Image 1 (cartoon, rainbow over the protein chains, first blue to last red):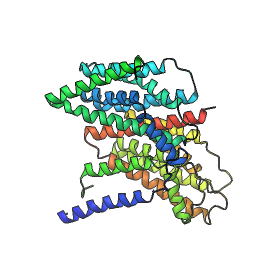
Image 2: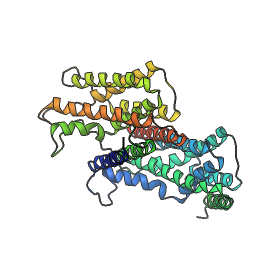
Image 3: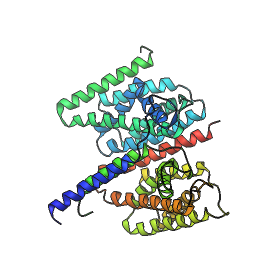
Image 4: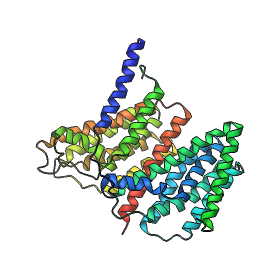
Length: 203
Length: 204
């Protein structure tokens, strides 16, 4: 098979996928919190609206990068599933004490793990991350707007969380250089300080 | 897969999977779509029904995680049961399928993909048969919604089968570690979405 045919086939496959995606365009919903797009936007923005959530999600990615493979790749598998359990508890309205404290502590603990470059066994790291995921998921579930489309809210919420992890992992990849390692640990310190600020209601 | 780079193909498949996950709508159970013919209405039904698309993507990923020799059995089972179920919807023997059951199956499939469990062939076949039955029976053509129910059902059959056959082609070729983890992350997202939707269903 010659090179030009390969290039043509490659391009045609890309064009096929692009054409397929064009079939799924919808009407603009112009900032509405209701309906399909509104539900997605609401769910997607929810984890991004709270600094306490953002720093914890990024810390998961940073810590994963410090731990290296397989932890770097396994933690993003564990977190969404456990977070969804917390989200389900929140949606069902089952009381769970200490949510705000748990979320603030997640920043302190996960930030400290990054700061001190702690490298526990994978099951311990997974347990710590999973434990705090419950609190974050609960907060998202309990604060769900009534008007939001349930399915697209869930899709948006999970997607945004995954992207924050990806952002953390991307930053964490700097650890392969000495200056990068210092930068990532400094990031961990900032996350821990942010967590302390939330814990003592300074923010 | 001789004519294109495998990682590019997988990247395309993953981008499209995520894009399709972003676009689900509420269940429409074959109401007619303005401007679309009967066949296109059926073609779009599995793609626009959230429970169906979650199950189909999940099963596609699951099939790809298993040795290729199993594909012909699992996909063959799915297609056979789907065909029978779709035909059953045209008779009076059709059973209404609760969306809760559909999302329960999506949750199970998502967890299996996330855990990357190697299942026995018989368990895989039962899982695929269940999915085929549920998707088929949940694709009832509403009376008077379309001119030709069989054309609409044919569209649904083509769409569901294409999706289920297409995804394993890419996932079977995921040889690198990060690709396999990417598939598991997608599985965990499917499980998380299904779990949240189930919680919405059970909310008072």
